[in-house]
Image (tube, rainbow, N blue to C red):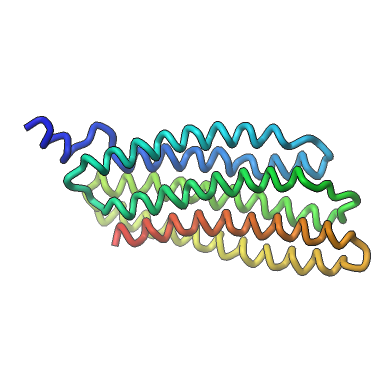
Length: 223
């Protein structure tokens, strides 16, 4: 009987694990503006990669626990595939932030126009906000589940997903604007630096896209 009850009501809630995992995504995302600030100030940024490695290790432990829970679980408010899809996209955020830091250590851009620096830093700030909204959305999923899908909680979740989608769309628009700005300097900037910075911007856009994927999956779960 105890084993049967454990399969229905696991010791650790899957939504709690998803929330804990999302926190490490947020921890990594909050480093993005700091990395950009230090990079354009000429400081060493490799140390940030060590921090992200720690976040990734802790997130992997949570992912393992989540898989174990779903191996034993007989019943859940949403499918194992949905949970694993969410955690996969959240994993990709941490991985992409790590790539972002490591790639930036490969080239030092000298005499970058102030306008370009300002817009790229703006992108970093928006990336941080998108991941923050994603974390709030994951937390709200837990509230929805624990409220037995209360209409009030579902409506609140709908409002959150709208906010994230709006911010992610703005990030895409900003990324294109920065790309155009960079290439407008093709006669004055080093061509390699232009391509390098543009690739960094594209990587940041992908980070936002992963956060958006999490929100979309949660929207599918609650409807």
